[in-house]
Image (cartoon, rainbow, N blue to C red):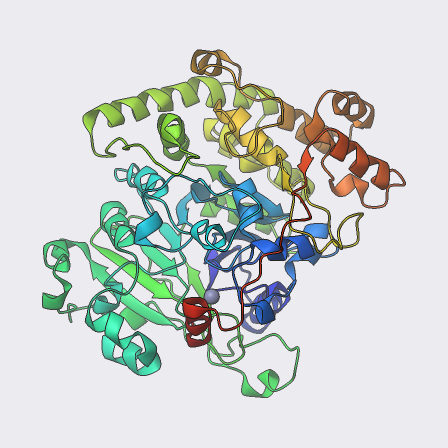
Length: 583
Ligand SMILES: [Zn+2]
């Protein structure tokens, strides 16, 4: 499977996709998925700009709203994590992960999915020690403090990921770098490129200490980051982790330890970059790394940080990495004579779902976060094992009978007919298909919709995807519960049936059924069904729908009389680091 990895996006989605498509043409290859390492800026409308922590002069809508509104569609399945310049309100709506727009999936504050069978984990935000052990206490409207603390990574999310320590983890995405990872590559070259960080590099204070713990815990094959706006590769050898604890003593091993072996040199195309609006910097000499193996012995993690999307920068990396479902993917492509783009499978990871259930009672929305279970403890391991059994009994065993082994995305792409052995490739894990549980629904209005041009601070929304995920997993939606909704007790949660509604909708789409009448019925009782979605695009009822949503308090407007938060252009650390490339 060919994966493209990109550093910071900063709202430049058009350029990123144009670069990818151009690289595909020039190299005669097809990229199966794109991984974006934060600063994505999923800004749906002007209101979301109030949740974006950048100096005023950088507050721009960017490209994302066109993908959100449906005007454009991401051409390649895209996985996203959050950084420190985000529409933090929208990302919090999808705390557990979800579709930011069609074909663009956010992994959540922390999340793990299986991409064509490869285990891909993501952790959003950046590290700030003062906020690390707090709960997710931030609420809209953000003030000058919470607009920043909301993107600070929390221990709760790191600890949950650590619980995957016995799993094979192929790829981890983080926005900031694991602390001291720069010691495992060409540190001097990095200082030459980024002298601004010299002190932090020399004092070993660059990056996130919890992420280095996570790296040593999970031992992933690859770790991709962004944030410092520089391309940098490192090879972390886990058998030297004892010395890694004292990085000043570490000498990156010389034997077979060329970090650049991971690199694919995407030299800039200077001529094209000189043309304004042209896709920046796809390579004319891309070499695809093919020496990766499926079974990472856990001995080495290949770290690569990438630049932000600018002409003549190394912002894009393509790797060719074997995946467990390569054969099936290739067979589906081949059956269509490679005339269509066939997306890889995207599934939830069972262990992650079990971990999410096990830790959910400890999830705090208060300032204080109570002590968390040790991910290495026997009692927690036992609890996670129980939750895995719950998932097998409730989410997997029923799935194949429910859906007949069909994947919605494949159906939509017409690949069903081209895959004679498709039924055979399906297994119980098909019940964990992301497409089956969550579907993209717009909550906030796109700019052209009623209310979409409002400059007022953003409302908050009950996000149907978060409802769907929580319903699927049998956990309380603590993020954006429907107003007036009283969560069931824990025992009721465990007793309830797996969430069914999304599947009905998906299956109807596959079967070509019209459920519009049924939806009308649901809308009278489910305020979430009134959230603005794609169907309302050209509807005469758009105004009425929006009004009805207001009436049902699905949308929660802040007091518009309050002062609008602004960050001044000379705002301390933020502006300095932005300019120096720590965005
Ligand atoms: Zn950035």
